[in-house]
Image (tube, rainbow, N blue to C red):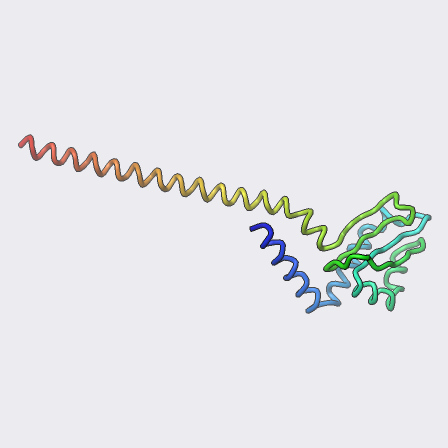
Length: 154
C-alpha cells in the first residue's frame, strides 16, 4: 500500500510540476533561499538539479546567483529525478538533498506509521463491533432461554 502511495505521489507531483512549472520554479527558489544561510560560505556552493531544471537555470542563472553572496555552480545530476535539488558546499562539508524523490522516501516512514495507526484503529473498531455483536447474540439467547423456561414453569 505504501509503495502504491509513493508511486501515486510521484505521478501527482510530476503532473503538477508539468502543469505549473513557473509555480514549481518559485517553490525551488524559495526552498533554496531558505537554506542559503547554511550553505552561503566562502568556499562556494554547488547546486545539483535534474536535466530540465538545469537547462532552465543555466538560461536564468541570475535567479540563482542573486540568492547568494558567494559563487554558485550549477550542475546536472547523473541520475535524473522528478524535481527538487541537492545543494552543498564545493568542498562537500555540508550537503542537503531536497529532491522530491528523497523527500517522499524520507517522509514515507511517517506516512507508514500513520497508515499503520489507521489500520490498527480500524481493526480494533472491527473487533469491538464483533464483540458487541457476540454479546448481543448471547443476551438474545439467554432471553429466549428464560422465555422458554417460563413457559415450561406455567
